Image 1 (tube, rainbow over the protein chains, first blue to last red):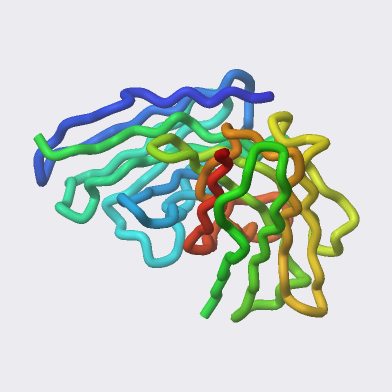
Image 2: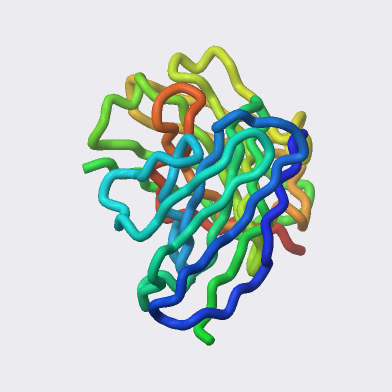
Length: 107
Length: 119
């Protein structure tokens, strides 16, 4: 199975900060990567698909980049609503796998 | 509006069985692949299984292969997960999730149903 590794596991940041989360795949997944946001007690929400495509309704401050084995999720200016856990997920193979998650907390 | 409503969760003893259901509405259910994703308490997301639009192909995570069966009834717009030989490590919130199409990202999630495996 393809392993997905996110870094950091926890990120402390302030409102207005630029935030970057990295996701690495154990083998090439082309651009078949998605990013999800999960708030406490809620279902995950799709933010980015195909590595860099913004899901409808997602604020423009979210962006994704990368291909092959290395990907990033960037929040250009962190807002109070963005404090949450973020997961990457590959869908290159039949067996889908998620990263372990990155918690973005208030500094 | 797309809606996915899971049901069937609860407390079950180790070795027992449970069937989860997911009622779908607001879209053409028969046109989309569907998935189950679970999340153990305080832990991350784990993909469990998916089924293609016609119900002819199912894929499973190694951790549930041979114990869980995903199925769908397109006439009833309902997705199922039959869980047998349940273990403590199967304790989790189980989410019903719609694929963006056929083998793409996961763009609609249900609210989840909690399964607790304990004696």
